[in-house]
Structures are given as C-alpha cells and as structure tokens.
Image (cartoon, rainbow, N blue to C red; front, side):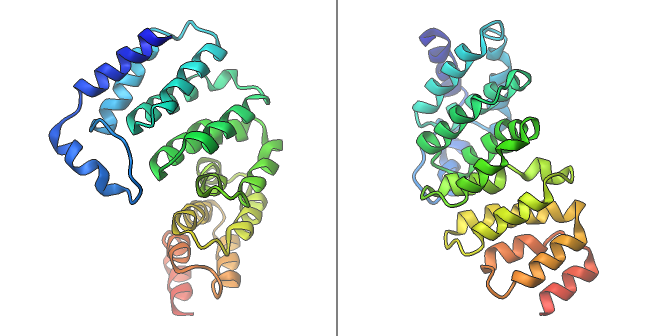
Length: 235
C-alpha cells in the first residue's frame, strides 16, 4: 500500500505551482495543509493512478483512501474522495459507518467536506435512502463538519428533485445553527432544492425567514424565480 500512496504524494508535490501555493490558504479561515496543486490537476492525477489499483478489492481501496485522508493534506483528501467515488457501484449499507468515520475524524475544511459528501456520500444515500435518518443525526452532531455534511450530502439528490421532505426536516434541524459554514451548507441545499421544488422551498423560506440566519437566507433565495426572489427580499 505504501508504494502507491507515496507515489501519488510525490506526484502531487511535484505538480505544485507557486501561484496556487501562495493562494491556497486564502480560501479557508481554518489552517489547512496543502501542496499547492490546481484542482483539475489533482483530479487528473486521481484518475491516472487509480488505474494502478482498480483491480483491488473495495476494502483495499478504502484502506488507500484512509491513508490519504490521514495525511491532512487537502489534495490527498481530494484523491481519497475521488477513489472512494470511483467504486460507488460496489457500495453496501455497512459502508456508511466508514464514510461517517472519515467525516468525523479527518474532514477539517469545507472543500474536503463538500467534495466527499456531494459525490461519495450523496451517491450512497441515493442507493440506500433508509440512511437519510443518519443524516438527521448528523444535523445535531457537535462536529461542525458533520453538521455541514448533513446538508451538502443532499446537493446532487436535491438537484434531481429527490428527498424534499427529508431536506426540509434537515433544514429545520439546522435552522438555528450559529456556525456560518453550516448555514452556507444548508442554504446551498435549499437553493438547489428550489430548482426542482420552487413553490415548496419558497413557502418554507417565507415561513422561516424571520429566524433564518442571514447567510442561509441569502443562499436559499438566490436561485428562486425572479418574482419569488423579489417577494422574499422585500419582506
């Protein structure tokens, strides 16, 4: 295992450029570790080196992912997110605990959270919607990234018009969350859900707007139809 991981890390380190390295921290309030590699290049490296391990079992690939997550480098986390998603057709219900463990133990910034949850965890939820109840548990967790995960996991399903009632229930659980990174996550979730369920999300936002934090409200109304957006902004 160490050989492929060290190879990937070496390639990432050599792919860094000074401009990206100088700017990477600017996108985050919390301190992150980074090589300084552009995201499209990280994705290309992920695909290229996945070819060397695609014959491995799911368990072995998950072990590679865990090792990548453990370094703390954001580019390593993106490779782990990609590799865990590449094998999504093999997901089983028991994998949820693995994914939840990675979020709780390793996720420490919004980019890793969103990349992992949008794709790996979101796809899992579409395959096994009974685990939506677990996202509701996420929404009241003490870990800010777990709470954000409750919302951003549903971004792609929401875009497809799925799970509206669960989205609204999770929004209720997150409504009074004071962490603005959580607010942005569930505001984003509501905004995307409004593309498929305009009237329902509009009615939800108008009912909750008096207590909804400003950041989340802005995200939630951003993609509403013009007439609804105008009405929401006036009140």
